[in-house]
Structure formats: structure tokens, C-alpha cells
Image (cartoon, rainbow over all chains, first blue to last red; front, top):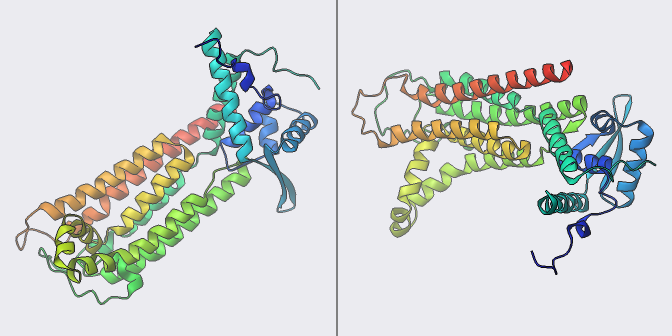
Length: 103
Length: 252
């Protein structure tokens, strides 16, 4: 790699480079849509913490939040956006490059 | 808000991403149901493939059945009934699979994308109904340069259609699309084994030079029994694996 090559941390996105938000995007990218209770359990987050992370991702247009009902139960579903997919791919690529550089 | 990421190394973050992907995929995958369902539907078609008398090679009956019954071909005594059976079975099978994935998503909280599967089913059934007409037109009504030049493909394909095995190709396409959506190598392996069985059965019928009396009234059961067995075995293994995964998660 030449000295002119951009340092891999340049590829890290502050919104995505956070363990839980990276987890939310990873799970959402593996599915058509995912319910918040699944995210809470998989990431071991409280409802309040998850809600704050989701708000950050939604404000950045990386996920879409859909509210609905199943019978009488209110349900909230999360769907990753194309921008979210791209941000996740870029983050994983940057992490891999960092790993390759520093072992 | 605490910021737990900064003290995590890239290796730990990537490990976490891989573990979450694996867990989500395992929770989302539910392809044992369509395998068992289409296995049962294929097995249930078996009586239609039994002839009332021993057939002989190359006896296509006049194809004057209803166009919507075209999936049953023309070689069998009960081709028209087989065609109606497959039309209903394929539509019901694809819709039941869609309902299954919807129910699973509500139950587990993680949904498999199914739009591509539904599209594959609808297009597959439509192509299955139209293909025999197109193949006969190309073979018997087009310029001989075209019909002779494409005979290597159109003849075997018409054989598949005439034996009432186009529905198997529709099922194959549906399973391959589902394997892509499920990101499942296991489902891909079952779909390829099923396709191989369908090609092998048709290859045997196509390449064998049958004399009258070579085929029995049960010969066409090959169209139903081996393919159904592959789907049912694949579905049973997938169901056991899914059950074991659920039990393991419950113990952790």
C-alpha cells in the first residue's frame, strides 16, 4: 500500500461505527424487516437505549421505522434502507482493512 | 449516552457482526416447510402418473385439453386431470409458503423477503402454461431452418412438458429463488438435487429407445416418486436441524 492510500479509518462512519447501531444494521440487513423486540433481545438493550439508537439511524435515513398492529398488539418494525446497506458495507470494509493493516 | 464501541477492536466488531448475521439467519430460515409441502404435493400427484394400460414410446395424444390444464402434458391417460391438479397445487403451494413466512415473521420478529419468491411462482406457472404452445409452434409451424436449428433444445423441453414435468421445473425455480432469499446453502443443495433428479428422469425417457412393452403402467411414477422423496428428505433434515437449533438456544 502506498503512503497516498487513504487511512482505513476514513471509511468509518460515526453514525454506524457504534457497536449497537452496527448490530441493528447487521440484523436488519439479514432480513426483510425486523421487529424491535427481536433487536432488544439480540442486542441486550433496554427499550430506551434501543429507541435512541434507532432515532439516530432513522435521522440519518439508514433505517425506516414502520408501526402497525398484529391483532390488538402494537408492533414496530425496522427496515434497512439502501443508504443503510451501503453504510454497513462501507463500515465492514473499513473494519476489514483496519484489521489487515494492524492484525 | 455511553459509547461502548471505541474500546472495541475491529476484530471484535467484525466477530460481533458475523455472530449476529449467523443468529439472525438461523432465526429467519424456515425453508423446511416449503420443502415438505412441495414434497407432499409431488407425492400426491403420483396416482395421476400411473397409466391404466402399458404405454408405448412416442404416442402423444392430441393436445386438445383446456389450455389451463397444459401443465399435465399429453403423454398420460390422466394428463388433463394432472394438469388441473398441478395448476391448483402450484398456486396453493406458493400461497401457503407465503402465508407460512408471514406467520413466522410475526412469531419470531424477523422476516424473510418473499416478494421475489411470489414473483418466481407467478411467472413460473404462467411460463409453464405457455411453454408447450410455444415449443409446438417452434417445432411444427416455423421455418425448417429455425425448427431444425433449435430442435436440440425444443425436443427435450417438449418431452418434459409432454410427461407432465414442467411443474417440477416451476418448483425448482421457486426453490432456487428461495435459497437466494434465505441465503441458504442447504436449500440450494436440496434444490439442485431435485433438479438433478428431474433432469435424470427426463434424460432417461428421452435417450432410451423404447420398444412397445418396455414401459409398464408404473414407469411414469419416476416423475413423482424420486423428486418427492428428495424434497421430503431435505425438508425432514431441515426441520430437525431447525428444531435442534431452537432447543440449543433455549438451553443457553
